[in-house]
Length: 527
Image (cartoon, rainbow, N blue to C red):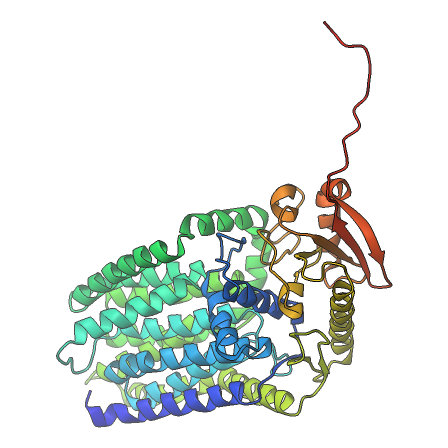
């Protein structure tokens, strides 16, 4: 592909990247109308890593370390908690843009590459859960959008370059390795799919060399990261523990999920079938199967109902294959179908692209106008809860935000205001929101029947041993989590802590200087 033909892709990628990054960063505020407690997980994690803690070594998490280092970079660069997510995502977009330019510019014609590049950049930038309405703005579960977007870029490498240039293999291998390892250290399930795709490329004689180099680079990067991070073994252990709690999905859930996305499968099957009619190859069949099966597996372990991105990208790849391998003996209607393939891909990408763009715009407006309610904590004033067409949801999160402000004030009134604090709720955010030392150990978050239950949970000493203060909310954001934590850790709490404060929103326990002696029954001693 000539340099001139790839320039529209370059322009579209960088223009979308810079506009979205500016819209995220310039308002200087994080706004959320949904999943507010989820965002606090990553803001607290960002604070922890800036304070010197290391994911999986100093606290438990089933998610990859990039989920904390990415917002941690944003917090470190700005010293503002409300800028952690916008700046972190902007940095990732700037890293991803040149990879998109290289991969799409060498493999896709502009009619397909331009809309796909814009689509994936918007998906990466949007503060909205994929498949939902733009009114539900939130940086929560951003790791799934990273996973979809980077995996989408990687899948385009199934196509061979139109006009390979000097050093093409090494550039392809570097791009694939960077994408794969970013996926691995964000969420391992996406990384497994990425490695499976690279293994599939080994079956293509023309791409086998650079795919092998890419796998070798992945191994080298993994070893280097392990030397620095040293948390791989603990990360796998945390994943196994979470899987024990929520790893089994009932069959009816898969059936219900498939019914929701059955239309997506029908469209994808038609496009893939048409492409196979033009170029019947085993490796293409395996590629389309990977897009469909991996996509279904990923959407079922995400908090998401529709929008299988791997099949949308697979459709774009199929369209490019059709245009490259037109059959001379095809009928006029078939030729028309092939010529219209780029338009069809644009139409398929449009719904999610528009909703993603709308969410970026809505977030920018809400953040710029300082709409809604700001947290009244030392580090939380640039984190806002906003209302977009759902007053009930807004009131729920506003009350939760007010309780955090009350809790921060309660902590500040203690004789030891710099205590390490644990909240028995979904997330324990006071270290980051109040500028306190982070607790030693514990989980990044607690979600009953997702990452802990009555049988699978951290030992009491590991959960509570590294804290000075335990706070129990009277109006928790996750009531089931609070109830289970009280049942599991109540005996340890009563032995090592004493209740010192109680308000209309919080019960506060402080650690005893000397644990209360255990009273043992007396009786005759045996000889």
